[in-house]
Amino acid sequence: MLNVVFEDSSILVLSKPSGQIINRAQTTKGKTTLQDELEKRFGIKKSEEGIGGRAGIVHRLDKETSGIILVAKTQSAFEALQSQFKEREVRKEYLALVHGKSPKSGSIEAAIDRNPKNRMRFAVVSGGRKSMTEYAVLQYYKHEEELLSFLKVKPFTGRSLNWDWSASNALCVLATRIMPEVS
Image (tube, rainbow, N blue to C red; front, side, top):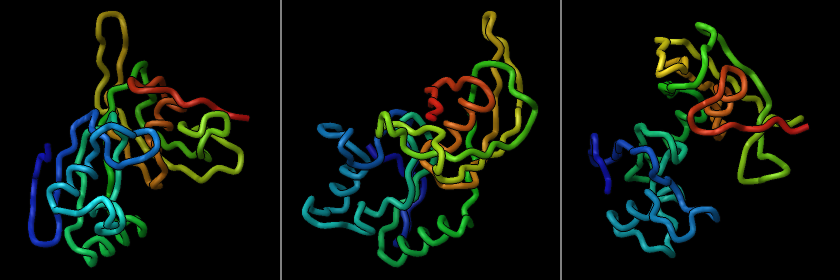
């Protein structure tokens, strides 16, 4: 089901819940994706490419991440929005609850890419693409005997799992998953 936040003749702004898969891939066979729902809503046939080749979806969020998704309804809107993401004109911020006590603020830089031992995952890889993320602690919490840090996270590069990797490896263990370092 599409949760529409805003819609006009050029764009659709959706609120994506955690657990929703954005686009079809080898790992999503047999599962309904946002791409499937958009193709159905706009009457795009499976054999057609759709706007931008992916039903107008301008960017992605991880399955586990909730947040805003921009969808172009025209090819010109798709190209303009993609250009804004490419030129880093779009500011992205996430809120994350992580295990442990993180330093109050900082930035993390690393080279990440697909894990050569498991192509479905990402990892720190020699020769990987630069990833940069800044973070700031908004508040510390204690749940039972465990200390938690509530963070505002700002990725500056559009790498898959950019802030997820950064938080789990450089700050503390993320509540979602841990990405290994590959040597």
